[in-house]
Amino acid sequence: MTERMLEQNPSPPATDALKPAIVQAVQLSNAETASYAPSQIAIGPDMMISQASGLVAQAAANYFDGVSKLVLASQSVLLKQMTQALAEQNLKQAGEDALGIVATDLLMGAAAAVAAAAGAMEAESASFAIDRIDQSIAKYSSVLNASKTPSGS
Image (cartoon, rainbow, N blue to C red; front, side, top):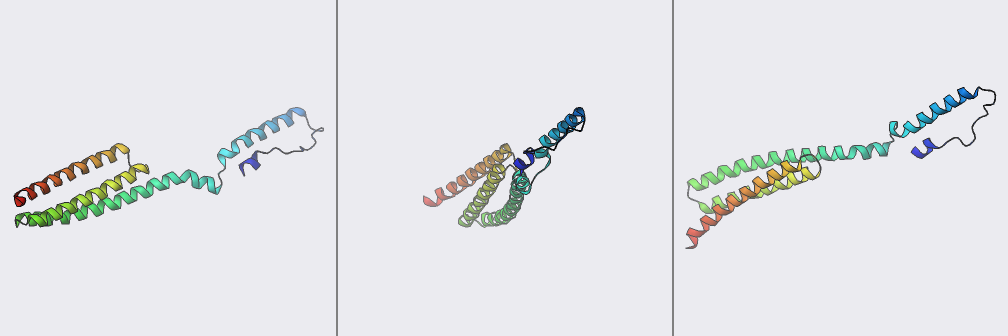
């Protein structure tokens, strides 16, 4: 379609009776208008291609928002259960709850990576979130290792 717009008329009409200066001015104006046409007119597929990155970023942001809400809700429940298990000296149950928290952290890290890859989140922010998740996993891993040591002796 763009190529068609740029094609010149193969046989221009006769302009012998007109003043050459007027014909030249009109031709110049037409040439300028034709040269701007591709940037001013967008057809359906071109519009979809230009909007695709914004739509992907918006979908990734919505995905990250949904996952983060799910993770926060899950972690709240798991933290409550883990606290109760620790108060009751039920270390096995507390360890399982801690593993659940680690799993939700991994889910959050994956969502942050998706959001960063889609451009919905800065890579530096995603990196920060993933680093915090790594620290959380290390913390729970050390808690689990500490709980295994007394019972294994």
